[in-house]
Image (cartoon, rainbow, N blue to C red; front, side, top):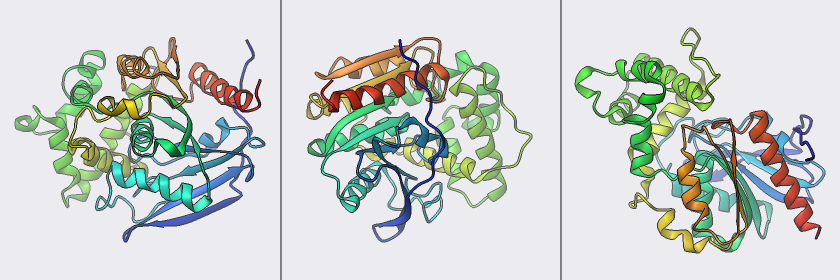
Length: 319
């Protein structure tokens, strides 16, 4: 089997702030071939922003690579603004980018919460989606959030979960998501920074089992945006008004060509959700990646994703 490696670092040929609505401007960058096959990268979180390494999944000679920081994180402005900020606004931001660049149908590459956003967009704009590559499926159902904040992760990472729990007052520990949301919507800057560091380090630790936690560091802007925006989305149940929003509407996307990769040992987003989704799709290639977790950047996971991208090239070239 051919081995695939990340492409060399590249810089955007264009970057800008795109106004979306009355409040927000999202940071967009375009890389690679401006006349190439258009593909948009959707980062996770919500609130994590996009990093330079994400550009390196894509062949810059073949793909017109579009990356953006979702509302209120990364280089988008205003920072950590929760007004006019939910999954439907983010969905419309993808549509605004597509129209701004002048793309007919777009390919989507997404991971973690990015898959939630990608699937929501595709459900509402199936006619505008060409193909999708999705990694670490997150359906954001109540049971997925309960696994994270109640029973589930506490059984796999008991020490780390205890640290997440012990920061919260004892009388509020039965609902950690509500408690952290209360902190992150308060005016207590010190508490917000303390809680954000714990929140971010817990996320990093469970992403891959070899990751280590370290609270002996400064608080970064990405810690703040990740914690505030994740609790904003999760506490409000993605603003869907239907906790099984994606699977209840899967008929709208069942014929779109979709490639899914999911780590066998992904404890952030469990493989069962990906399996359930894949079995409802008519045109899906589903790969469980052994001995790996949630990160798209591990050697085993990245090789699968890079192969998926090469497969699209071959499919488009009629091979």
